[in-house]
Structure formats: C-alpha cells, structure tokens
Image (tube, rainbow, N blue to C red; front, side):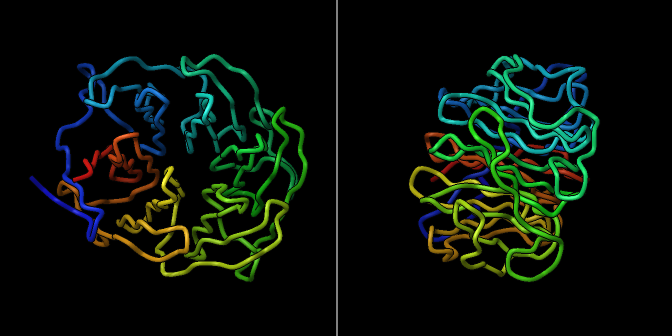
Length: 284
C-alpha cells in the first residue's frame, strides 16, 4: 500500500477507486466536491460533466450532459447540498440541485463581461456562512466578485498585477472565520482579505495554487498545479506536502487542480492536463 503525507496527516492511496461504466473515461478532472451523504461529484471535461460515486467508488449516476461547455472548472457544494458549478468556457456560475436541476445562473451564458464585470472565464464559487457568494474571475478578469444569496452583485475587487490585492489568475476562493482566501495562481500565493475585499496579508511558498478547501477542523488543502499537494493549518503553517515532480505513480501527480475531504477525513484530488484522473487518499 502506497502511503503519502507526513506528521499526523498520513494517507494510503486507494488505487483503482472510481469504477466507470464501460467505454467511459475521465477527461481532465477540474473539480471534485462531496455532499452531506459522502457522495463524490467529479466535475470533468468529458461528455459526462458531472459523475457521481459513493465513497467506495461505485458509480451512481451522471448529469450535466449538453449543459456545460468543454471548460468545466470548479465545483462546490454548500451546507444545504446546493451545487455551484463554474464554467469558464461560457462565463457562468450555475447553482443546481444534487440531481442537476438549475436553480440560478450568475452571468449570462456565452457573454463575456466587460473589464472587471462578471464574468470573463470564472474559475470557482464558494458560499460564506452568511449566504453571500464569492467568485474568483479568473482567466479573463483579475477580480473577486461578491454576490448576495439571491445573485445580486455587491462588490468586486482586484486588478491585474503582482502587488497586494492584485491578481494574476485568481483561480480559487474560500471563506473561513470572516476572511476571504484567494488562490492567486500565477503569483504563486494565497492572498487573504476581509469580507469586503480589504487586503490583510498573503502566504507564499506555493507553486501555482489552484484551489482551496478547508475542512471542519480548519485544515486547508491546496492542490498546486506543479504536481504537488499541500495541507496547512489556519495560520498558514505547513503540516504536510507531497509530490513536486510529474508522475503518474499512485499517490503522485501530474497537475492537481481540485480537492475535497469527506466526513471520514479521506482526501480526493482531481487532475487536469495529462493527469485526467481522480485519486482517493484514505486517512490513516
């Protein structure tokens, strides 16, 4: 059994997890999220955009066929089991049920927002405890947008650059303890803001951080596009890290892009580019 991680965060790789129907294959796995019943939602760039599995890896269903562009990006499930899917190919964020029924659309499908205006290739959406929605936007814009629970735009911040409060591909966003954490991918850092977008500080020592997931214990999981996975505490102190060299060996990575943790503490990591797979890491 292959083991990775370090300290108190050691995992065994569940090789072969996620049996697909015959003839199916994962495309680039841009995102992964888990609902309240530990069902795993794999958001991937294939003809079956959302594939759903139980925690044992048994395939349950798929949905989203014909809905999303070929550039599916981020997936997030809130505490009420609402699913938020960011699609940078058609410039929208969709709120859906667990079965894929559309509840709300942020942005206009296939319409590019003007400079600084939602959206120009958005990457990720997250819901704060207050119900406000934060979206990283993304490839075409260098912004974070804050929306009300019903989709009204409240505030936007950020410009392109390397300075405090500036972004070079804001690629992921999370809210914890009244602060907004942004994975500023091409600047190789995570920036931290108030809920109204005021810059607080930043954490460095990343290699293209893609997304951020924080579990109920405050542990932060950061998949880095340059082939590694990092886990930090809420103070930004590194607790575990592995990978760093491109490899398809079990437990290693080509291009990790999204991560989520289930109620048992098991970690799921999706990969893009040549990776095109989802790996499950069972907490020891």
